Length: 312
Ligand code: PSU
Ligand code: MN
Image 1 (cartoon, rainbow, N blue to C red):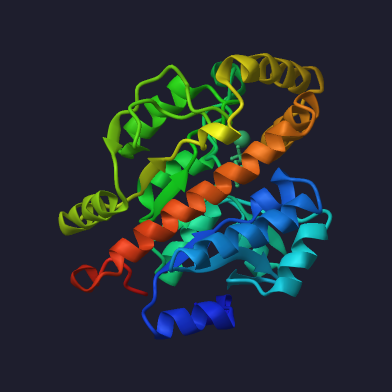
Image 2 (cartoon, helix red, strand yellow):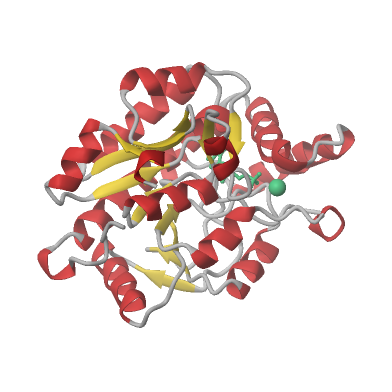
């Protein structure tokens, strides 16, 4: 096992010193944003984590090893690489066994974070139930992963390209608590509003840390999903996004896009339709999530809280 996991110097030092660590995913770099904004964003997000007292661990698979933390050159190469595998639960071990390189989705990043003993993870938006799933059956493996893997996952809500009510139903079935941060409404990625009340609400990193410790104390497995609204000054209002989302979904259906291509296709289409504004919003919300994740990791590493980040 240990030979399949490899830590960057920065993350190794943090673990040795028992400092808080925040996991970050890499599909957003390879499939979620265009170069060079993807590289710039990845570096900014890492710096945001550092600025708030934790150490960033961007996770990817390079040449058949799960890398926990990437150095600047590795990040740069990943940001420019073409034909990188997009790895989820189904293909993580495949990529390792075939010595391949791939970026990790929310699902695969959670698996890697748990293996590495990292309790807190920041992403942009989770995958979920796609619109039309009643015929396409397209439901992201992220939802099932959230139900089974022990990582606090901070996102800006489900991406609004999805069917949010159905996504919430599946999360409930999976036993995943969905906690809106400092708001009553479930945020919708680019927008603060979704029109849907969040199942749960908490208002501080300390309360999230307490909720996490309580779940662990009663032996519960699975994630807490924190839905952190994009800052108001960076949002694109929901009514404006609705038009673009509908157009993007229509284009995906017309082009017969399926499987792993659906989410990257929709994100790229929305980038065009918003004239680049969706990307600026996406960058702002990821940074905002990294900031909250760092605060939660710091809260969890307070002396009384040891044990919640135990390594395997
Ligand atoms: N958040 C973003 N951009 C992304 C993603 C999330 O801001 O590209 C990625 C995540 O890695 C998530 C994946 O796990 O999209 C979902 O893909 P799918 O719907 O195929 O499961
Ligand atoms: Mn899918």
